[in-house]
Image (tube, rainbow, N blue to C red):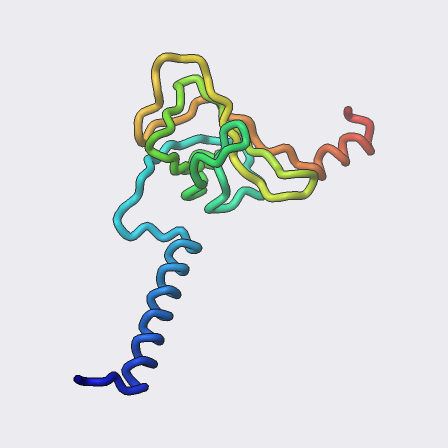
Length: 146
């Protein structure tokens, strides 16, 4: 009968710890190893001031995806949204840049439409509302333009 020596037990313990650390890194980092379970949709905004990559995309306060990229296209901000595969967006949906609280993080809120047709993968949301900038509102109020 063969007994395990302490070095073998320590090695197995360290291996299990490394596997647990790798699992947590993948889950917390939201890394997709086996492919993604979402599709891309694009939305063009006049201003996305403060919106960042990996910001949430929500419908009715429920997260349905993430912002995958923001680029400048014909002097408008073209935002790439990654939407979960099981969520279908109507053609007349409206995308808005919103803020959590007064000075919170920016996110994209989608108001669903009533159309029977859906936006295909790599499609575009036609109706958008840009971010409201607090500084502009305050300056308009101060200088009497509201």
